[in-house]
Image 1: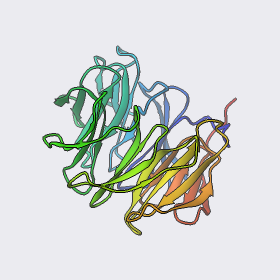
Image 2 (image 1 turned 120 degrees about the horizontal axis):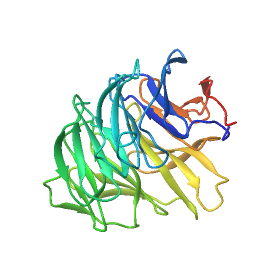
Image 3 (image 1 turned 30 degrees about the horizontal axis):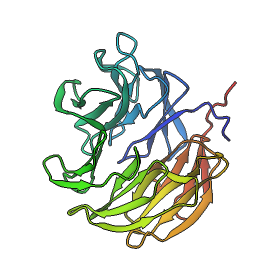
Length: 293
C-alpha cells in the first residue's frame, strides 16, 4: 500500500510507541501493542530528510523543518498531548534529527553548518561538531560513528580510527555489541569491528540495489535491512544479514516506502501500516493509517 498518506515514521527504542506523520506537519502517536492512536497534533515538521524523532521513553517527539522561523526550526513536543516543550527557530536546513540513546539529548544535523547536540529538556545547545553529514550512536557503549563531509568516516569523536569512504554518502548505520554495519548509496553493506574499524565482512547486493535501512537484532545477533532496487523502484524487501558472516536471506517483500524496527514488538512497522515479524515476515497487525486523497 504505497498510497498511504504517511511519509515519516519514528519508533521509540524502549517502548512500543510510534510517531507517524503526513506529508507536512501533522504527527500521530500510536501504541503498536494495542494498535491505538494516542494523539494527533501539528508540529514544525516539513517533508524531506529524517526530521521526525521519538525519545527512547516515547514521551518526547521532536520535529524539524527545512526553514527556520516561527513556523519552522526544530520543536520538541509532549507525545501524549502535543504540547510544545521548546522551540529553536534559529535552526534551519535540518536534514537529520534523532535522540541520543539515553534520551537526554538530540542530534540536529543541517545540510550545511555544524551539527548540534541539543538538551532534550530545554533545547539548549550542549555540543557542536563541524563538517558532519550524520551522527550514529551505539546503544551498547559511548561509541559514535561520524559521517564526515567529503572525508573518510570516523569511529569515535576523539579517535584516530578512520573508515574508508567507498561512495558519496551513507544510507544507514547500526551498531551491535561489538560491530558496526554501514550501507552506502549504490554500494555494499560493510560490517566492521567497532573497537578497531577492521572489516569483518562485506555484502554486495545485486546490480542497482542497495540497503536503505539497517537494524541490529540482539536475539539472533544478526542485522536486518531494507534492500531496494533504486534503478526501477520495483523491488523492495526485508533481508537478514548474518552478524558474523554477512550471509544474506530474504525474509519477505515489502509494499511500503518507509519502514522502522520496533524492538519492543520485534517487528517491522511500515508506512503502509503493516506490522511484520522481523524473522519470518509474517503479518502480525495493521494500523489504520489514512490514505492519500
